Image (cartoon, rainbow over all chains, first blue to last red; front, side, top):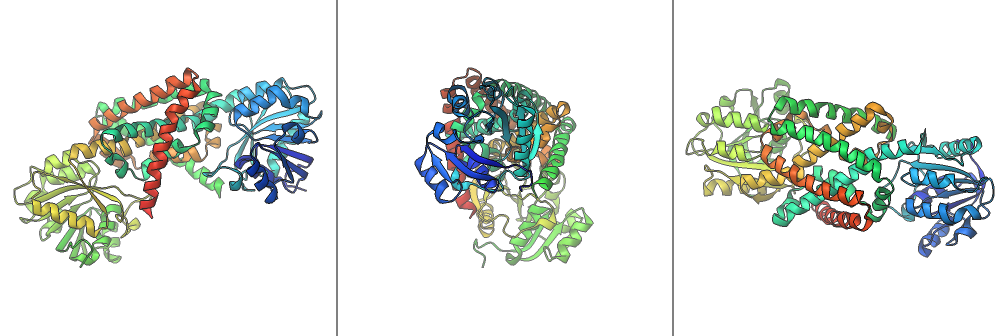
Length: 296
Length: 296
């Protein structure tokens, strides 16, 4: 018996990247059989040869038709395409359908239009790694990390409990909330930071056009602040395009804070400057203490 | 003989923090004697007991009067105060005076008004550590890291060469440039990133006032983007207050980049969004490859 009490007969994971592969590894002991669906042949071969899944196919219909639990681990718009166009007719009634896409409002809407009888829960695990792809799969990827669950019009009480058991089996920390709230929160802590990182690198690149030494002097501060700018552009474009409104809101709120800080700086009022910086510092240190202790 | 050929009879380091302590450790073998000057008694005691310096005093005049090389390793405005008010009359003629403050224009100006006969070079090593203070001192702190040198009106050709030898002995990488250029480059790669980090944390803190769960979902992206906001507020306030103009310029340039990106996002033109993000990603990856290979 797994820690969360979750078990299933036939688990199908659609999308064998880092997230899907790690999900398969983490659920190895609680599913009688695991099928992987992925368009890439090398990925499928790797997943089977490394016993991450029992069998793999590039055919969505074939992959999901016998499953009692299906996890969609793909970019948001790919997930949307599957939900809107095809998967509803392939699934057996009563199948638990879980997605782990990075934004939730559009997916929850789409799930709400699935055939009655499908049990759908929209999820977002807050975890990741520098490396991506099936070869980076890690059975402990979800352990101790937040795992957001959003109910949809196709979430029965039983489906909700089963999804919670799944999260517990992954040893992740469940957070139940509605999709709009999720999308705003991730805009604040994930999408806004990414945009700032990219705009910072673009600014330094502009400076670099007239003085390339800027790159040679850049050190640890710039390294950390530019890391997100190195993220996969297609993946981030997919995420941003499905969360434009919340991202625009957070950008507007950020501009207010930056303008406040700038006004204090330009007016050369040192006391006002530190009065802005100090609570930000304390908030960061407080948060980091909690974050670090959970990471252990 | 040291790698850089630098040697001195009596080295005095003013300010026994991480930077000064590490300087003392790195120059241990090339100075006949090292004096430390620091107002904090526990710091002085630690530095002497751990053989970081040979003797320590809280009296600037006493500490520098016999030195042939003096390194000022203190906050910018403390350095400015020493140069403008006192140290010129304490130093022997021909003493090499080097500062390692984080901004250079004000310090170069002040050094240019020192008594003729003092050899002054304004420097800024681009290095650091999470931990600060004498107890974090590390003989290898400067190794392989950029070390900016700015000539002043009190930099003779001999002083310049001696400072370059000092940098070589530290196994750092010398970059000679004027102070205005230095201050603009560090505004781009250090001060702007700090302000963005602080304004980001302030934005998330505002969100946290209405929905505290934002802190619980924050993960690795936020961790990296918020690290600089945890910097010492007094230290950063000191730096920003002596580089306001360059920082304001870089903030304006950053706003242009962020507004460009936002316009593309809001207009929902995915291609335009990725066309902004892709060169930023490539610039970051290119830079990081070089940075990492140098760090090894």
